[in-house]
Image (cartoon, rainbow, N blue to C red; front, side, top):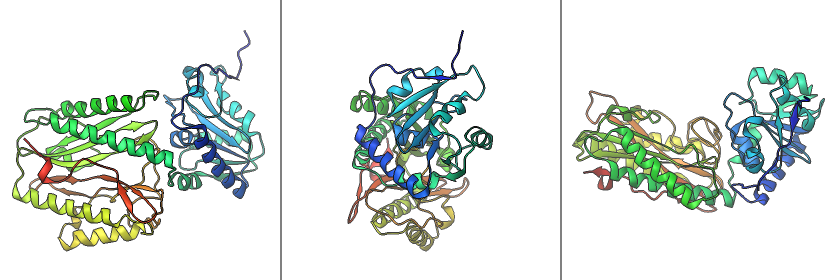
Length: 400
């Protein structure tokens, strides 16, 4: 039996997160950058860039995936285990590579990229082992790291993206209300988290009946578990007076949104209330700074000063916010748009960014725990719009 190195298996109708024109527009901007840099073909390997330029969000499971973009073609490369799903869920062409011969993946890429060309690749994603194979099979005349250019493109959202992100923020609010309803003394973190996750997945399915549903999750933390922003859910049971962190994360076609709130079970002591209210004040102040023309590092320094005046800066543990778009807890990051001291990006219309100050007070101290609020804002021509609706602060989030 003659077993091919690659083949095309296309069946069913294409169903994409956005209209064809959205992907055509993204590819047009990319090709303009390629022409400026003299790149003949881009070989994307990351989940976020492949999803951004095609709509296809792959599931690697130990297999490599890619998307090759040239001046005329855009082709995703997928493993045979996925059959025609990558073609149905991706803009452009799709080639399936086979397992019958080692490195058929690179042979498939070669048929689109050609050899002895100038190749763009993602320096922040492509492994050393795969870069060796790229050089062996594509014999590039020159390799150029295209990741910084693509990240800058992804930082500026289209109207279609902002519409989807807005829907995601609404879904996060739905999860937040479901979590509040589930909070009670004796409930486990996992029980509360599942209530929020289920509510969000049902809401996503209602709003996006043709989508694929994956990766929506909740981090619901209590007591000492609130000390880190990314602490996983446990089976710890809630006690009266516990500090809580509500974190809902709906995922819609690779697009991440978030809602984060400090809560307390039943009552909040005076020391905790004082820290909570200070963090809320910093949150409100920070949101007021998210305006077009503002520099990320300047915003960060101003919030630092706000906390320092209240002798609280030493309890800050990470940056004050970040970009939103195609990202997740295991892929993607637009690191050029983060509210940190070392980021000098200027906010521009079409950017989407969070404000999320957090203070962590160690165990054994008055007001111990992690305090965090998180809203998402869309930067407009003259101001910014908060698209998060769930209330923050003690008046709403001390839950009986």
